[in-house]
Length: 204
Length: 305
Image (cartoon, rainbow over all chains, first blue to last red; front, side, top):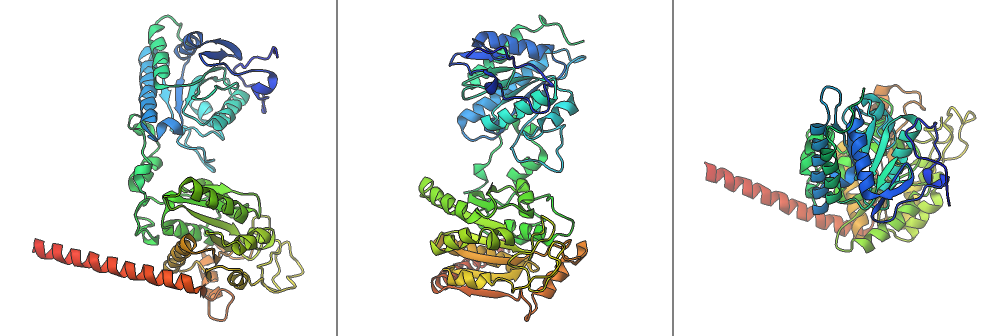
């Protein structure tokens, strides 16, 4: 199936269509996608690193699968996520850019209030994006169904660029998605950020 | 079983909101002696709730959560109503079922947990309102009891459909006039505790939640009996102060008035013979544990002296 649909930063509209219903397909192992087009993983690594370096508020959103030390693998990923955040922070211009690391500890709807400064919730992720003026973000360690929900809400109501570092088959609803995430893969992304430091024009 | 099961990844500990750090450090998971007296001292499994100010259901929720003997291995099954507004704030696994389906869901869940975790005690507790338990879900409620499913059913009885504006329910008292039941109820309150007894429940209590000590005792008894023997049922009066025309501070008095000896929520308890034996055995063990603790304390005091 071919499609002309592209998964682009929004705001698309209140209820954006799911990207899969528009013909976007998931990458095979070793691949990734950018705006719905299948690319090599390295190409996506470079693009994701560029997006982080060009953003005013590049943000990593770790979810429950890495925030909680379920097992050794999760703890390793948490370490890699921290390293990625520290690398982004180190590589951006502190006068113009502010890297953030905001957790999604669980998925329960936090009504009547959420503190968008310190956490993100999949049922209203737009509140955290709006409050912190986040323009590029990456989800990691979020269960797929909750990530899909968040990614659609973000695409629908914000102009934030979304990256998914998925441990399963990837996410059509992200603007850029990796699959089969490991600590090593997250580390490679950090390496790309380091490599491209100073080559990407900072935001205006 | 303990807090060891919930650890925050070391590298990301500092970014976790304080409520999660507190939950890991100061919650009562793994403490076999936990009870309602931990409320206010330890991190509570429900900190904020989204119910009306002064709602007796919120008190009941706190007492019940504080009294679960095994919260880290408990799954609560709820149904649509005011209770379902609270479950998102509760730090215990929970499932929201379709209205009235709660006992059917709990049956499957309990069986699946027994297969999946044969060496671990997993408690299932149904918590639903009177509409879900007695009217729309009566079939599922009774069938679970007939089948001797090993879980506890708790009914928050507010004697009407409060969440939808005050319609008549089976547990409403005869003659009561509600906002959406203007001619008054024409038949008697359904006697579900008696039906529960006849349907095979091994521990049945009808009470209010005005006394936290009592709530703790019946919750622990009901869950322990359900775990070892068979179905148990608790019917607790949690009046909807809005729907019966009371103010926020009048919920407690309403419960006290309704539990007087001649009133409909006078304490009633039924315990089957096997359940009596189990509870007696557990009480003896508890007595022995306390005596042992006392002996140890005395020996430590002597050593220090």
